[in-house]
Image 1 (cartoon, rainbow, N blue to C red):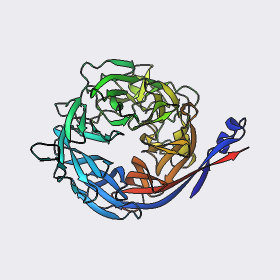
Image 2 (tube, rainbow, N blue to C red; image 1 turned 90 degrees about the vertical axis):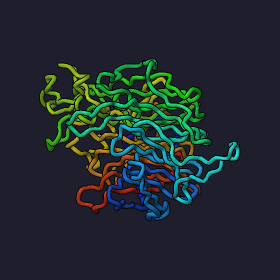
Image 3 (cartoon, one colour; image 1 turned 120 degrees about the vertical axis):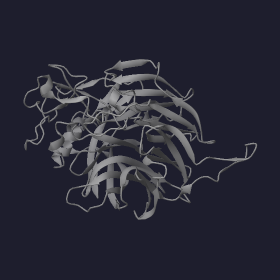
Length: 490
């Protein structure tokens, strides 16, 4: 267990003028790690079911249901009869799986509903209002490559992000056609599709929308405001977000997210990989935010969006080059940049190596600068081999509200050990780094889930791989208990 004070030594100078300030103290206690051993099973996205006190972990060939108290496998659910699973979401005892078609993911995908008690497809739910009598379907057809899904806070709708990426092998051209990206809206009560939101004719605002990559908009991740009126969808490769009006089940706008200037103080990066000397420096490079995970919360009755600015290219790598192609010299000579956005003297690389908080109009309220990378380096887990290519790659986001505070957990996919950064974001513009949860034996956190059960808070971390030299499982899921308290400080 580690005890971390919000008013740490790093923050002492900025807090010295405050008297009687509330100090948030958070303790992280590792409860268990489960190694997934089924062939092909990967730990990607976790979800919690309060009805059965289980953690459901989606990853490629199936969903592993774990006893949340012990981490013991309750059941492995094989999804290969439907395809490959990318995500799981749970609401009121029903687990929804986002499943892509196999072997051709360009075909229509599906959502399959499971009962969390029986852990079987929920086919026996009677519709008493139907004439003649009918039953809810356990499978609903959605768009191509459903990558993520989430229930709206009111539980009435299930939103499915259909990424619709063509088939690809690294450095081999995409297979055509490129299906249209979309968000499927499912009515939970009837399990019917009531809308498919696409992007034709949707107004665009903001800046640096990547519409020149040969791909359409590809929805990646979804968050919904607390009143279930508006959803915000990351369009990662396009460096944009889509605003989805849930009264119309249609996109109202696409907002470009701009670029980050790595020449500014506080934004320094290490652009040189494998040089045995990690050096964060100001460089004449701009970073496309290109976020993956997104979450939302309210502060002073306003909704704010929290983005993990991972960065991404086409899967066939047809839109990337080294900076030397545009005149880049040491230490920028090996930096990977977007060849669709860069030009001689103007280097642009995907990924901001940070997390950001924005208002719902897309304006940045806070950015973590280079904190994620410098803190990883201070802990000896910075992976220098990733320096030229998106750095620590912030990917997953989870939000915890406790003791009148709001905490953001940011998973870092590319560190030598599993790392989750913790920030106090109660006041968005004054967000503060608290600490980094580092788990020996785990690596590559893909998805995070924060939940409350019987008065206690927990963080489930889905790690895609195990660290070099550790136990040879496919990947690990680890659970922490989070204990938060506040004390008054002079």
